[in-house]
Length: 125
Image 1 (cartoon, rainbow, N blue to C red):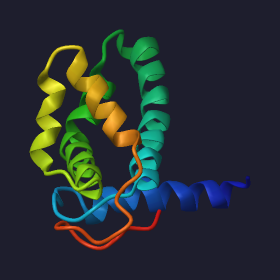
Image 2: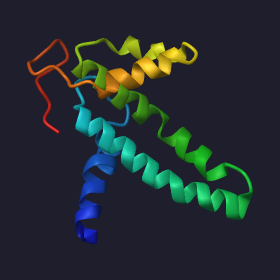
Image 3: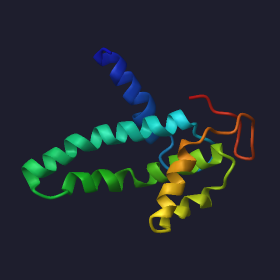
Image 4: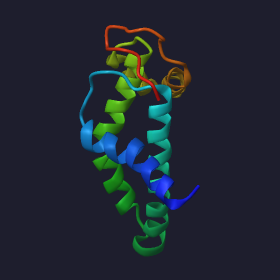
């Protein structure tokens, strides 16, 4: 994969989501859209973690990234739940120790509904 394709992929699934849907809690996000966003988030956070360890000896850049992407991460998670036909309040299941995050992870891995639902039309990845 050449650098232009990587840049286009990153822009489509990470930068555009942040720019256009920073706090958009309405609509749907396909399984592919959600996991591509997560992949890009991880790819961005790894070099920042290395810089944190080598330069700052603390999680400064990682904390800034996490705070800056908190709302978009929650928003795309809620849109992912909408794709499953569930309301966004299901996101709070993550607050249940141990089992809550596991249940949310399982839900995020499930395929979305193949028909329009209360949250919008089918979204193609």
